[in-house]
Length: 426
Image (cartoon, rainbow, N blue to C red):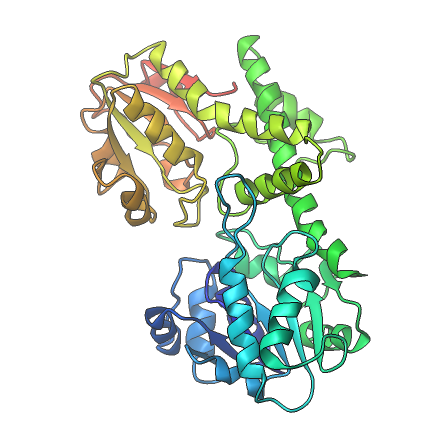
């Protein structure tokens, strides 16, 4: 197929590279000239396992990038992979999506025949048929349901495993009211993945992504709430949940208690569900509690530190600033929240992360960033483990002024070599 993808962020770039690697002709459209140049040069514009080699393999041979929307005219189907950030009230900001849809429509005005526009960005129910479709139709002169098809194909990609997630999904969701759009989506995915297909309506497909992430975020917050109780009772939450996870009604996934969830999806998506519920006059109390528990964890971690070291004036090493290992993304990172709480308490923070420090500097430019974990620990009064990078297992803490470690991620530590070891929920 000839496929156009609007947006070259984590989702758009990953999807484009994987589709091109499967044999489709893919054009990636983005307004950022540096991103376009990077892709065309065969390099990945983001840090993601397995992505670089796919772009290197397909650039110029199945995959190309451009800033010109007119490229969509030669394609059968367009995937919209544009950002939908949160407003202050938690609702999603559709301004980028609307601008992209308008530009897409203007380009499609020159195309004869029908074209399918499929939303892949995470949007609240009613967005594709209530905003995206009418915007494209108005600027293209096409008619929804006739020569303009609409679909929703939500993404379920995790940072650091996005390529693997795209190629090995638990499910693929196709939301559309038009059979010919569904046929195009079937053709798109047939050579790429083998997974159960959920055929549903547009709005149901939009809600599935939110429900998915809200369920997972709720599970983590419940585990952390129970983990906090375990800590107060002198119980190891990890021993508890090793047993709980053996119940197949619950499963062992997402049962690692600790510093909490973050990233670009969970915070934004849970907030969007809360906001849209309030717009309908419903207060989502359980989801409010899910967020409250998650926001509590970094503060609890600093309180645990204060039981042993006064943060005010202390040199505190923060190990990890990415929201999870395997990515350089610090959006919604509990580690970054931890840095903020330490600074509020007067701590002299020195941070280290294998790949995410450049992004962290944009938020905290005046924090000291070390070249290695050993450099971060040197002369530190305490260490806080915020991201469970494998290289943080079995570190040498001998260079610390006092070997106090507060662990938010359950890394491997020889506790006998430390003066104090505190696990967040164990």
